[in-house]
Length: 633
Ligand code: 3HC
Ligand code: NAI
Image (cartoon, rainbow, N blue to C red):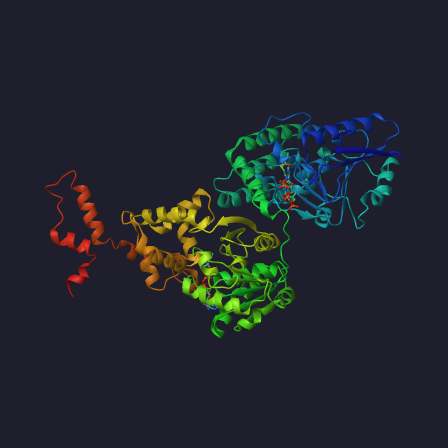
């Protein structure tokens, strides 16, 4: 064979093992090795059964993603799958660990599948803008029906070996880690003709209930028409599964291959695969290669508001012990509720039971006493976005946090160097910028001020990894990364609103484009006060040539900060997170303003200077920022 596929013959059994670390991706060399091993095993009259397995924690993570976009080299994976399926000797897939994408499709083309109890099985191609392109869309529905197959392909999440067994796509689950020896009897029994060798393409269990399959296709298509606007591969997946139900196998396979090729060419595939590698690359910080992060078991969060609550949940979910410190009992009660409501929602959706919530909250210690943070390994501050408030908190943290504790700020915009300067240990202070809702959003910006200790930086990354975030290193610069991008997006949304489009229509258009929420829904979710504080801070240094939209300020002046105050661009009924359109907000936006009127008249006067002439009074009022109401004073 070659280095990455090893063939061992054990009496009548040919053991074909993939050894392509780290994840046993099905690279060209692996495909060549597999094809050769299958051919040799078939030709050897002593061999009665073939068993394909992986190594380490992976059966195979699927096609080698690095190869997409390059010329494809033979043998291609569908050819190998077909060769395995049409083998005259029984072929077993011994799924020793994770089997994803093409890895699972390889398994599906075998005649029998035995999985170790900890194995994870899935078809995540959708996350890469692709579809299962090695027969997965045709073989899987034949075994488990359209609904379950589509669920696996459209949510892309793996299922456990136990679930696979219940679905019927796994024949046996073995408790023992020694999958080969545990499966030996089963394999030998097939040589005695005890278990018939049925190629998956000939299986029909999943096709029996035609009506249910038809309904499933319609339902999934409807769902994705609503939630997947602008996406390409989900609809291709649904079409392929529909073909599996209605056409002969070969025809379906051909259709799948053509659809796969279209997905492969799509810019969405290119973007998503770029993101796949970028997300992995951003964890690799050259100067941290030799650095061990510090111990991280106890986390203190200062502030229990929108962010403090979310960060506490993210940390609890990562198995940490979490202290929350608020400024008074009322704040603490709100903070506690912010945490509890996340778990109550899980309970109401059946994702966890009350006992699980109780167990998690045993690691949650709310307090108004800063002394409680003395044994924390890391402290994350998430109080109001005001430099003086943050400095005061960091002076206190410096007093109570133990030596060696990492101190972090979740500030959205403020200078971490300046915050760190009030402590006696600026090299231990960094920015950890979470995004709202902090327990859900994957991005975590790790903001590096000058002189930061590498150990502290490594500990920031370790926290991100432990929480399952995508930690991204950022310079300590205005708005870091995400908020700089958001700044441009928000500005344009504001201009469009002032120019006459309702914020609700703008949100709708952005959702139609494919975003889960629009910009004004996002402002309400994050809290209007954060951006307002930043705008006030920058008011004196703003370039006078820059157009400034004041509408958001008018809402904030009324205390309408979005979801947390029940009113922002939208109105929120008690306890609801779904906003409704608010006519009062539209009234505020109609307030055009004299400055704008004068600007318009001046613009029109270019065409007709005789008619369009602003009065001196209007010009003075515009220059002085007055309203008509001021004339009555
Ligand atoms: N091809 C090439 N490289 C891969 C790979 C793949 N399918 N999957 C993972 N890798 C690489 C990663 O880039 C990373 O490389 P690096 O160390 O140089 O950065 C290394 O393997 C380890 O990956 P992770 O850091 O992600 O390790 P984890 O243990 O956290 O996760 C995993 C492992 C769950 C397998 C995750 O990597 C993953 O989800 N991989 C993608 C799986 C996938 O989408 N498979 C379908 C591929 S498309 C396909 O099969 C088409 C077929 O239908 C024809
Ligand atoms: P929030 O107003 O919801 O919560 C702030 C909390 O801090 C309040 O509960 C308040 O009682 C508490 N607090 C104030 N002073 C305190 C003190 N001295 N000691 C203890 N607690 C104190 O604000 P939010 O939205 O949670 O923001 C917090 C920080 O996170 C800000 O710096 C903000 O810029 C940042 N941030 C906010 C994001 C968002 O989307 N809301 C996103 C990322 C960062």
